[in-house]
Length: 128
Image 1 (cartoon, rainbow, N blue to C red):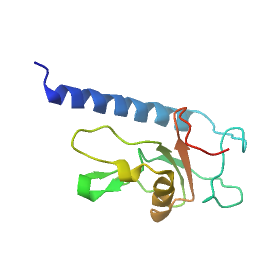
Image 2: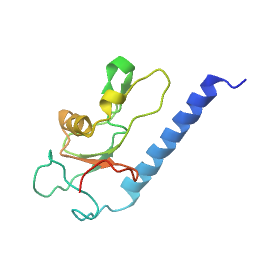
Image 3: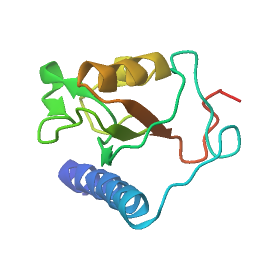
């Protein structure tokens, strides 16, 4: 019989691999992006140019009730936050209220970030 702990461990390993790959992408590649080609502003976007350090903040979740805070050990003040679309897959934890795009765009602002990039991993999340 398979242990349920193995399944949770495998899911966490997949999430950690995704984190690692995004960190490599953000820090090792230069991110010169063109509006409407590489990214699309949202209704919540401001106007202007931003030159700032990029900081990875996981799934952009601050949920003390679930024992999860992607901002716990990072300082995003004045930086652009790169986050993943969606939620971590964990048994007995419902992160669904943290997945809407509107919620994901407000959290970096609450932590003092100057911008936010949502990596949709090829999923259509609306936009352009």
